[in-house]
Amino acid sequence: MKFLKYIGEIGGIVGALMVATNTDLSAYGYIFFTSSSVAWTITAFFMKEWSLMRMSLVFTVINFFGLYQWFI
Image (cartoon, rainbow, N blue to C red):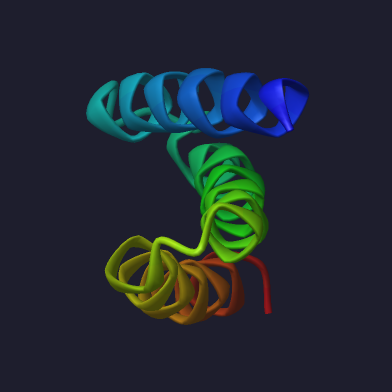
């Protein structure tokens, strides 16, 4: 469980930094955002933190939309 929290934390930070650079790397930030939100969704489920799980699930959908916009 702790590992997923670290993935969520680090993925979110790296993704935000990559998108904020507004360079060719920005698109790849969504990969980190998506992995972060998926990790937090799973973590929140096992912790029975339903509001965090719902929010992370919505972020996951939005991040998949971002991936679609940038890569497809």
